[in-house]
Amino acid sequence: MSTTKQIEANRANARKSTGPRTSTGKSISARNRSRHAALAAAVVLESESLSRFYQVLDFLIAEFKPATASEHVLVENMAVARWRQMRMWRFESAAVLQDKPTLAADLQCLHRFEKAYLRMFAMNRNSLKNFRSLSAQQFPSPLREPDDRLR
Image 1 (cartoon, helix red, strand yellow):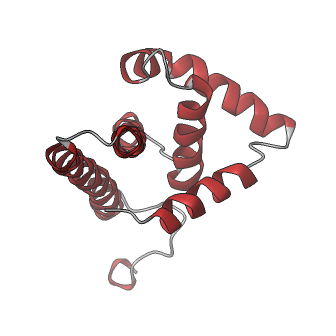
Image 2: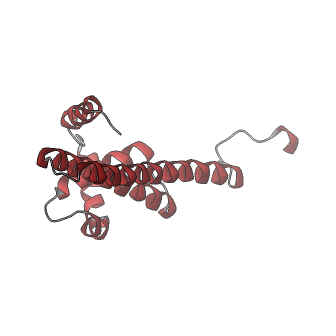
Image 3: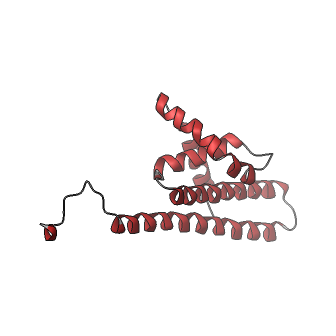
């Protein structure tokens, strides 16, 4: 379970984000929204911030720079997992504030979901790394120095 200190640090980091600054970066980011609209509609609840979801997605795209459709799917899956994990944190806060008699059972259920989303994120990140590693082995970059054995 994430501590209050970790949650606050995450929120503080999110507030520091200024998004893309160059005109090129802004145009790329604008295209991402139309490309990912169906994904967002399926994941973001009406009471949640669509722009915040896009921010999470844009951060992950900027970090992992997916180059193929498969890589985009893996990064989108990571964004969905992260978004759902953040939702569990909001539910947890609401449950604690309500101080219900079934709080322990509610928190246990929320923690199971949170762990599942953490695993989903890690699994997709690892799949992305493995995919890139295999692609590099199968399709070496033409810009690399030729292998000595071929000379």
